[in-house]
Image 1 (cartoon, rainbow, N blue to C red):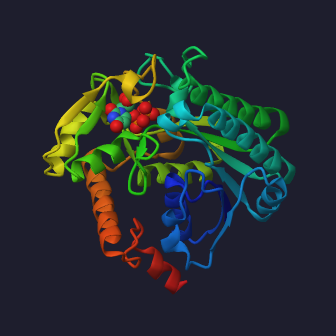
Image 2: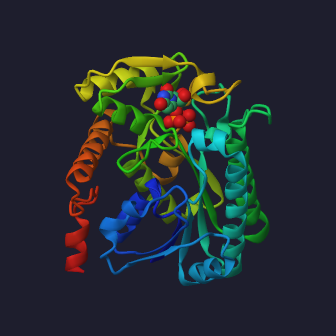
Length: 346
Ligand code: UDP
């Protein structure tokens, strides 16, 4: 199968690329490198079944050609990370809404199935735990920048479902819950890569707010497995699915866990939200998915513990530090040790 991945050199996209190549698929990546990085896919460059274009989704002629050449489109290209959203709201809104619009339209013309990446942010301030796909979305006021991300992704979902209902375009929507793993950068504010880097450097671990807020962190390998199952499930078409772990942890406990696991002497520093983000910033006190729907449809369940995932992330950052220190380019991190042998054997 030939799969077009928009945002394929991003964090989740690069792991999905690996998994698809491993199972023998051909992958076409379209990425403008706004938040993705060539480093994420450098170790795959030798695989002949991988092709990539560094360009924008707004290059509609190229997008149309790539969609035409593919059997399936996975749309991951989006503005991500709370910090980026708060700092660059225009970019967030435009990228998320216009990007999805052009992908859906291009896919409709060629009648290609599309996976749309959404987010647990759409549940907003809902307190109806665990969050179910059919539950209400409770968003904050429009003068609070954070909610533009949730609103833009909710609109993406509406549009995708409308394409399915009105124009029979097969779509599948995944709501990702705090996905973590190697190659995720802390640059856009994500908590786990930030804490791990701070702990490795014995720098203060920065807990925002009280630290009592909680999240469920899902290993990217599990997230990718969920996507593959959803793409293969005919019953998933026209549906929305949560993709996440149900292992819940408070942010202050996460800080202590990472500190202990990495044998770090970092102090834990509490920083008020208005200093961390902006005045009036609203955080979600809790976010827990129900995974009943995806389990019922595909049999998928996350299998990697937070403990193991933190080890993998720490290993990734240690290796990266070593590479930077010694200038070696041969030691590229890959979660997919089998890829080279699989490809050599093919
Ligand atoms: N957070 C933190 N310290 C950091 C980065 C984030 O305490 O250096 C908190 C953040 O305020 C939120 C949680 O960690 O409560 C998860 O943040 P992230 O941006 O990773 O994902 P979110 O769930 O907010 O989308």
